[in-house]
Length: 126
Picture 1 (cartoon, rainbow, N blue to C red):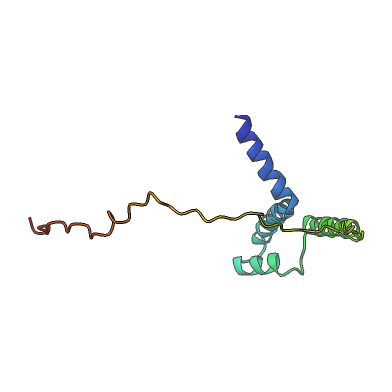
Picture 2 (cartoon, helix red, strand yellow):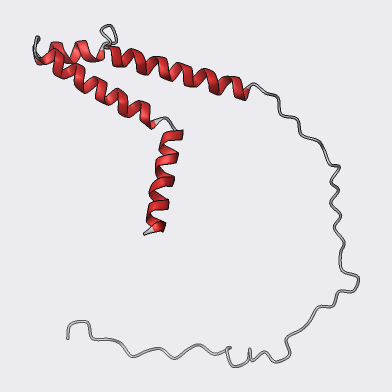
């Protein structure tokens, strides 16, 4: 139970960090705008007024302001310069002092030198 709750919380955190909440709010705003425009215009005109960007509702303006505020705060925090100190790491590869090649004396290769027996033909039409 707790594991599943942790997975759901992790997924929600990732979606919130990626800005999905703004997309969900924008979808609600567009749906509301489309419903409002359908009361006074035809379907094609309502679609055009909703998505042309020339007739934003108050929720669309608030979403745009929220997005720009969020982007400005992200930009100011990322403008700090990161400095990495070179530690002077040196890699040294040392070969082993004594190297001997071991041979496999118990190899039964003469047993494997013969071809395996061929199986009898199978009757496919039986």
